[in-house]
Length: 151
Image 1 (cartoon, rainbow, N blue to C red):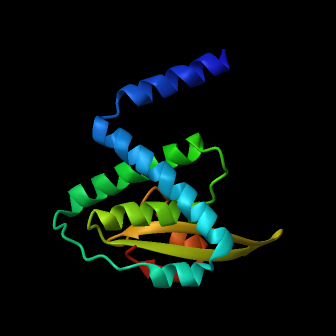
Image 2: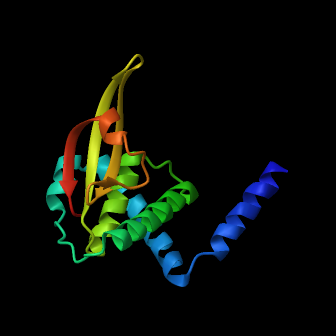
């Protein structure tokens, strides 16, 4: 019964995607794969140095956040559909790249925090100072190690 509910939900979500959303989902799937493989052979620092920075052409912050949230959902969905497990770093780099290619001011962050079990790390994306797809306290919970604008 749970499987039927799961499949029905997926079909419902798929029906609500436009053709451009399907293309973006396909793009996200491939970019996820690219970053997943690139981070195996190239350091994060070197990968960031290869990335151009994008200048924003958006002036409407409400529209900006709406578009950014839509792409966050598409990247999350592509990540769940992927054959490889995708980390938050790979998802963040993918979202940053997709937003920057659309001339949106996206900035990726890597943060850490100490827990009883050791050190925990997390990566997220901000657009105009707002965390996309995260709780508003993510920057408070993690000490920022590095951030990078554009991709």
